[in-house]
Image (cartoon, rainbow, N blue to C red):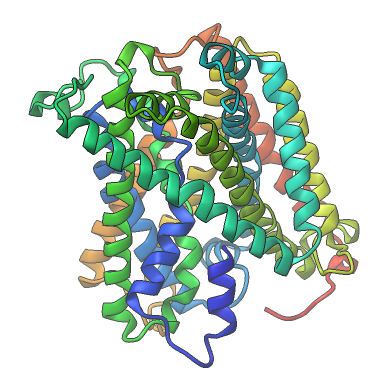
Length: 480
């Protein structure tokens, strides 16, 4: 996130290289926390990652690039959807983007709680502590509000902390995990997944196997954020697609090999959606006689999660503040502190996270809570992406003469193929997200579905109520 802001400030002086933009996209998308949830698929996870990249990641990035160059004003997805379908749906789109990120926070912070638990010397105790939902709830709240407090100090302080934490807690641990797993396999040690082509292709006869895979789409969410920089790339019609291809390949490789590293060390039946990444580190370090590094890595990963939260916590809220100042949010939510940070929106965001954490403690297990909250975030985020794909298609017909420095290749045929594939993939993942996974104990399936349906409807109604209640006095700026 900080890289994007710095690039924006220097846009008038320099051009972004293809490599720079590719790295920015990788930094925005890649996270280690989701690897455990796909490790139980073994080599089938590779199929899902490639499938999600083709039908979602690449279409999102390319469609966002056309929209960002055609309508480069501030507001992002609000501006794009508004141009296509009106301000009411535009406000819904940016609200969903902000809310999905907000709901996503507890799932990331549950992972931080697990990492903190694994700092202890006894793995059995660590695993028991990590599985305790009350412990997880307390850690989620403490870390989240710490990140909020740091964010309120302003962009300069937050960006320094988040950048350092991301390097220490995400990039370095990821490289260590894959490197040690490769050495482990090269030394002739057994692996716990099927390497055959049969293991690569999913079991389409078991519909429930697709449910957890739908969460991969959220792993790849966020590539549209850096589409605003497409005009800063030298020769955008060639440079931007190249940056997307490089970023996609690198991202998919990281996810595939990171996931298979966990599947190598831990048998399928023992994989836990929340803990297995840390268990894999402990087992690998113990195998190489470096057990003490497990505790150090757990601490580093906790720091990495904090850095990621700090980097993202104020981004979507800053976007909704910009839109709110056009008259879509009450004046109280438009207030900023002396550092220019949208303090009341962050407080509202924190209240939602706190409420979700309280609900989380009522569910059967941390694993069930992790899955349910993740799926709700996926559902809301995918609803926004569905609107994005529909907008790029509709605007080609509605405003065909609007200049677009970057356009999807292949004319109208290419538009329908790329945006159509993205739309199909998003709708498919959206539907699958409502189905209870058979691999996880989530209590009553009907209760699980009911919570997701009610949560989706309730959260979606809110922006329509705000829009209907808006007043002319809420508009505090006339700038785009």
